[in-house]
Amino acid sequence: MASKDRILRLKEETRNNILHAALAIGKNEGWQALSMRKIADMIEYTAPIIYEYFDNKDAILSELTCKGFAHLSERMEKAKAKHRLPGKQLEAMWMAYWNFAFEEKEYYQLMLGVEMSCCVMKSTPSSMKKPSELISDVIRELMKSKKPSDDEICKWYYTFWSVVHGLISINIVRQGVSDEINQQVLSNALTGIIHTLST
Image (cartoon, rainbow, N blue to C red; front, side, top):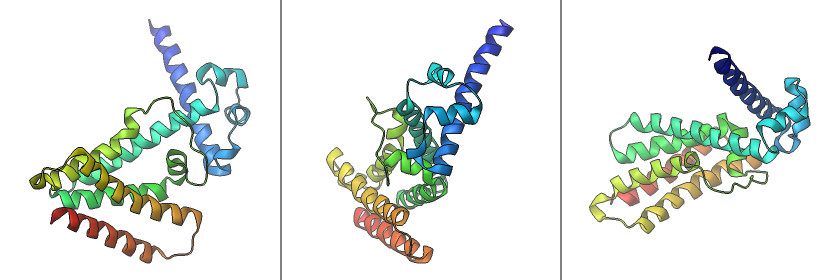
């Protein structure tokens, strides 16, 4: 039994090493530079061993995308937990989203296709839905007196997301605006949308 556990542990370790190597290549050289050969060279394995764990490069990118969404969700949940009022929760979660996009830029680019082609997944894993579900639940709470429909919640989620993701994308693609201006634009947008939802 002990040797079976050790084999499983080694397999999981190898799998994690492959993912860490892929992420390192993405951070250092960009996602377009990622290849199975580069991953194998980085962890000093042969390419066929990599294929024992992942069918192809897209499978690795899909796994990293799911991990990115899980990290983002965790940050958003922590931000939400610091506040009691739905309006403050929304603002805190979107600020956590913003910070994640720049602190984990390579993950964000992979997850949302900024300056690259997104990898295509056959179905949407639950980790990818979690951030939008967190936001939508708080929007529903904030608007509960109006008894909003699912379509109304969806509309407001996309209003928020369009503004925040759009501003992030502009900054990733074209630098030049100061952090102070970006923070002011973001704060004004979030405050304005939250005020509209609250009244």
